[in-house]
Image 1 (cartoon, rainbow, N blue to C red):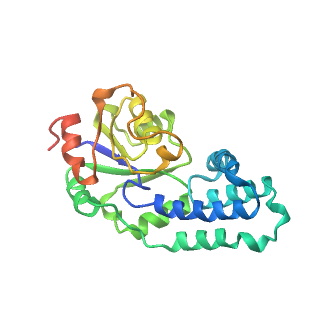
Image 2 (cartoon, rainbow, N blue to C red):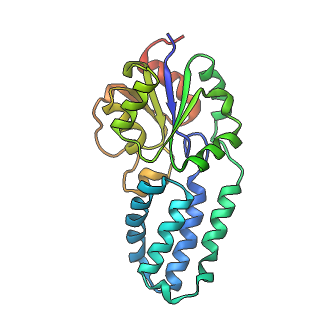
Image 3 (cartoon, rainbow, N blue to C red):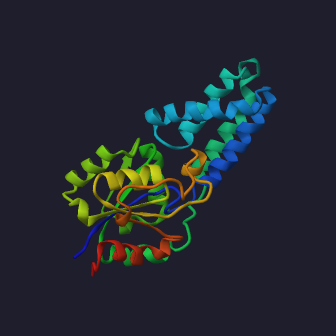
Length: 239
C-alpha cells in the first residue's frame, strides 16, 4: 500500500550549508573590522533565531540579523558601504545554481513512482518556491508546504489537510530538531539523513545527540540513495 513521504528541501535535496558558510565568513570579517571579536557570534545566533520566526529560514533573515548584530556591536560607526559584501553574498546566493545532493536525481523517480511525495521545508515562500522550480524536481511532488517553523502542531495540521494517517506518513530530513523529533511526536515515521555542519550542528545538536522517543519509528541513513530501503524497513512492504 502506498504511503506519503514528506521531504525537506535545504541540505536534504540540495546543498544549502556551503552558501551560509561563505556568508558567516564574510560576517566574521565584518565583526573583526568593527572590533567585535568572537562574542558577536552568539549575539548573531540569538538575533537570527528571532528573525527566522518572522521572515523564515534563508538568506534574507541572515542578512537582516547580520546587520542588526553589527549595529549592536558598534558597527554603526562605519559607513553603510562596508557591509556591501553581505548584500553581494545574498545576491549571489539567490542566483546560484541548485546543486542536488548525491543520489537525489536517481532516487526520487523511484520513490515518486510508488508513493505520494510532499515537499515540507522551512523558509520564505518566494525563496523556497524559486529553488524548487529551478531544481528540476517539480514533477515528482504533488504538493509543497513552506513553513516558518516545523513543530508538532504544523505536522499534525499537514496530515489533517492532506488526509494522511500518521502511521502512513514518513518525514525525511537532515535536522533532528525540525524534521525528526516533531514528526515522531505527531506519531509519524521519520528518516534522518545528516548533513555535516548543517542546522543541527550550528545549534549544538550533532547528529548522534540525545535519545529520541519512538526510536523504533525512525532510522538514520548516510545518503538519499538509501532512503527506499530504510522506509521499507520502518513501515513494512509498501509496493
